[in-house]
Length: 237
Image (cartoon, rainbow, N blue to C red; front, side, top):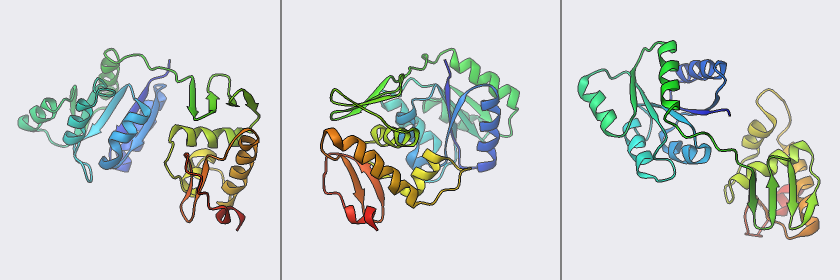
């Protein structure tokens, strides 16, 4: 079963190098550069191991480590601190905050990979999420099927990916740009209004069997929630 490794690092060159080498080892990799978003991303992805930089904007690695250890659903995830700080006191401070291991930059990639494997031995096996739902909308992630109540909803691959992102984050508003990047991918060029077309298709399919839970937020994007104050004018422009 594939393990997910989360890199929380604001230096792009380092995070890209780590991502490349971890993916070569067969791991799924998630990268976050801002300390303020780190906890939410850890809770969302539930990684098997976290590589955590000490010096981060807005929230330090030590603070993030303490917060992770204070939350029951993520407190047992192994954490390897990555830092330019090599003094004994700094190492003790990181370990006291809850880090499981400590690597000083610059570090050897083979050594870091070995340390990751060591921490994976103490990490629980990743769980496969089989289903996500919102109200009466249910998505079977194993068989790639969507139901509204007892009714099967046929969706195209793009609408399926769009709905999956919305269902995983109820109430969160996603911009068109974010959806384009994360549903279509970085290497595919499509216009931002393409999102509106697929959202309309998704709405049409879902709303055959119930009320509309997809909300359009003017000048912001889309979310799924039970607030039906949808600004249809955004879609029709």
